[in-house]
Image 1 (cartoon, one colour):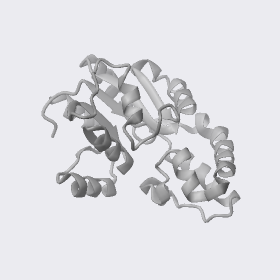
Image 2 (cartoon, one colour):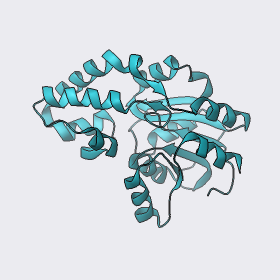
Image 3 (spheres, helix red, strand yellow):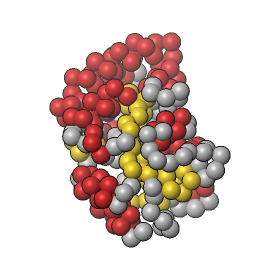
Length: 227
């Protein structure tokens, strides 16, 4: 359990604030088939197998080799057909964001979704006013799990970020191992959202303790309110 209220919370986007697994899986499935590859199952996508939770510019060259740019075109063609029509806000998100702002906590989004498409989705769902910054893949020098997008996001907050010193006033909240790695690499607090058992194991093995964790936004909000 955290011991004090954070000054800033950085949220992952996909499946932390927005329900997008079905969109991502559908777009990847079509891409893999068109590239002559065996598609990942829904469960494999959720677990981030083959490095799929990395940004496209980092994961696709590993998966598709020299043809990664062709795969990127297939993915975006599929993704852009459906992402705004099918995206939904996760249950309890608006109440969470409103309550956090009422507690004078600054909020940002840091995602491995391409920045322009990320901001389109945030705006489409009406959540843009809640955030100091919205940082996606290709916005920074490198993407999650490096510290670069975190550093860029924090520039628009009141926090003076120094990666050399651990900062327990900044939380990174996300649903994947990549998000916990991002927190570790950025020297801030990692907070796991959802039911990713592999991420809990990762944190225990790499940090020597259980991750700060909430299964849903109601539980997360209860933890923040208790500080």
